[in-house]
Length: 349
Ligand SMILES: Nc1ncnc2c1ncn2[C@@H]1O[C@H](COP(=O)(O)OP(=O)(O)OP(=O)(O)O)[C@@H](O)[C@H]1O
Ligand SMILES: [Mg+2]
Image (cartoon, rainbow, N blue to C red; front, side):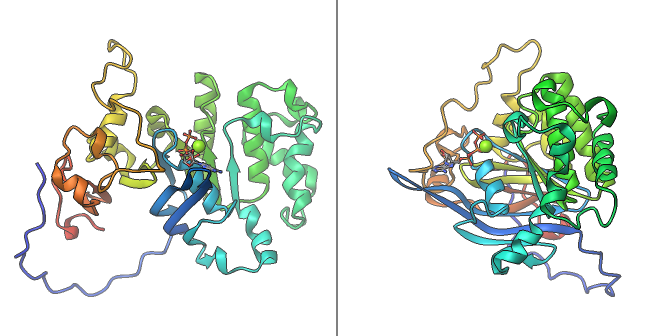
């Protein structure tokens, strides 16, 4: 099934005259990210050698089972705490190289929205007070404009009428409304990057749709770079341009969301897709992902999916697969991918 680029490929054609250099739209870039947690049983490698780039006006979905390292990556990007190793740059600035004062000044540019909005909203404050928090913490954010106007603007942006909701407290909001307040507060900080960690998984289906459409629209309108963390592939389809699939701390497949979900190249992505409930198919009757993931304290040698992979063979135990191109903007780390491997020139990588 797999095809490797021929070793005797002809030399490439003479290069065309260089055209205009496309503008670099990368807002945040992580390279070689490693996160090791100290546990009683020893070091736990939650994230191993992850590279990712968040682009302006695009949303990357980070997908993987529970414990695959999604939140560890999000926290490492924000340096809460810093990664064990690897670099993170924001608009080209290496965050690790910044003195504490400059890092604090950059903090508002990277905002995170969490799964449970109520736990991140002070129950004693009104909605207006909550949304004003970043403006008070970082004066200058409102660029001389009236604080109340800026707050109302953010509430309108998330579809909450300031007159109706401005004076309410968190316990007077539904889950979806509370999540929209959390997003309005994140927006008030004037972010470049918006990270949503399982931001809709606690909401009912209609509130999920509202919040997802909102996040998608705001990324476009405000030129944000989005990172959307979820284990729900239905949500991924609705909100993201690109997808990165995480398996025990390593990215095993990445590419444009539509293409990856239409024809996954990694058996793990295919298994995750097969596990999405479908009308007419008994729950759990997927025949795939037969066992719990191995412990990250003692991951399998070679490919970390091999102990659960129907296609595994000897090479998978001996050697960790490298990322290889399988389509335009698409790569997969698998010795036996479900799509043929292409020569790099055909994929624009
Ligand atoms: N502070 C910590 N100390 C020790 N181990 C941790 C810590 N945080 C996370 N881990 C471990 O690191 C691994 C990755 O956890 P992480 O929370 O990043 O996964 P996740 O993909 O976000 O999972 P979920 O979908 O359940 O939120 C897990 O094995 C977890 O138990
Ligand atoms: Mg998590």
